[in-house]
Figure 1 (cartoon, rainbow, N blue to C red):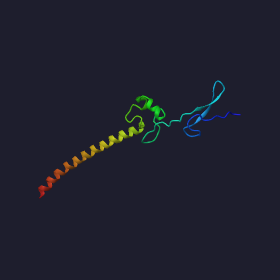
Figure 2 (cartoon, rainbow, N blue to C red):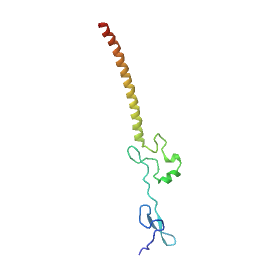
Figure 3 (cartoon, rainbow, N blue to C red):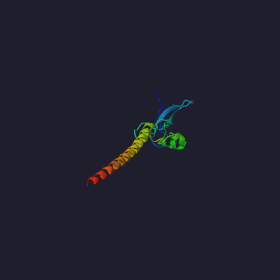
Figure 4 (cartoon, rainbow, N blue to C red):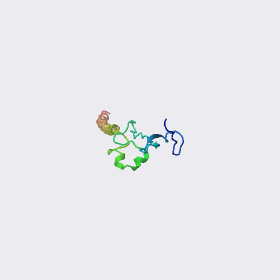
Length: 124
């Protein structure tokens, strides 16, 4: 029959933060080994997918990492995935292009109105 063990930490109940597994020591004793929580890892703020190139760690372990290990060397690195960043860049570019096109069309319209207004004034 298996030997029963008691919790050795703060909580005496099987909670999320108090998970243990049985471990047999080289001396043949059974002891409880505390299991750390599994980290979910960072995800993209736009689409919600997991970010590639960033380790899945607990928050305290992220603080111990170097800055270059916490993020990807790119705009929005460590916050947004590459696909979403590409979409943002393209969207911003197209919006700027649209502004330029509007301005050119407005200039054409104003230049087209000037000669027509001159013609109408001659008829009067």
